[in-house]
Image 1 (tube, protein in one colour):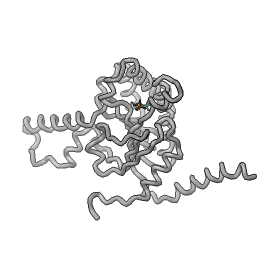
Image 2 (cartoon, helix red, strand yellow):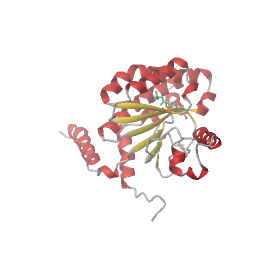
Image 3 (cartoon, protein in one colour):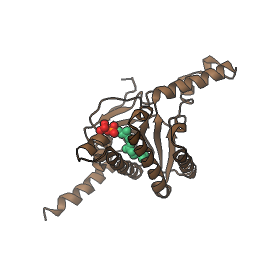
Image 4 (cartoon, protein in one colour):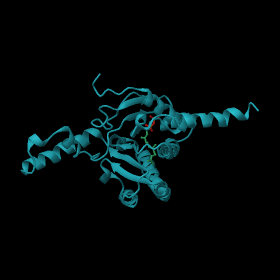
Length: 255
Ligand code: FPP
């Protein structure tokens, strides 16, 4: 008797307690730095690509978690502009994984109501993957359950510099007045134009860095750092992160 009770009653209790969090206490946008795939693989004597592949399953878990709790935005740091400097074999494995992910999970994403979006310099992706990405974005554009934003070949400084360049071009063409540049208008020139800022930023694997991720957008995000490696990041870990967030008082610089 004692053996069966903990598993499903505790599952039920966890489910209950997530649903007792008032909706306004839940993050509207979660962003994740998915770190630790390499270490996860290394500790099992597996190649790094096996860690990335296991990490793709965590992506799926995260999407499902957000859908079931009504969290409408999820942004994932899938490939940074610096990741191009990794060994060619690893870059190729990551590109292949992205391709497989889009190909295999597109129908599922459509069924689940996922609207796919991308930020970053996607022109650097291999042509067939870029085309598949564009098709996936188009075909999911009408979905409303969750907005899944993949940061691909993304670097925040490049994004900010790009926004400054676009603004400068408009000013020199006489289409924009310098006085019109506010925090809001500047934000419209970033890749994330129209998206809400992340409320909660999660980084796995014990690292305490931002690594050029959404520097502008995370100004007031709550940070959640965990030692858990990304492939091991479970539904329970997501719950802990969200519950931790729900307990915090956000002041946005006020008192
Ligand atoms: C960092 O871990 C992770 C990456 C560079 C890639 C993240 C990509 C995925 C999780 C793949 C799945 C995503 C999609 C959307 C297909 P690391 O390799 O730097 O880990 P380490 O610090 O332990 O070496």
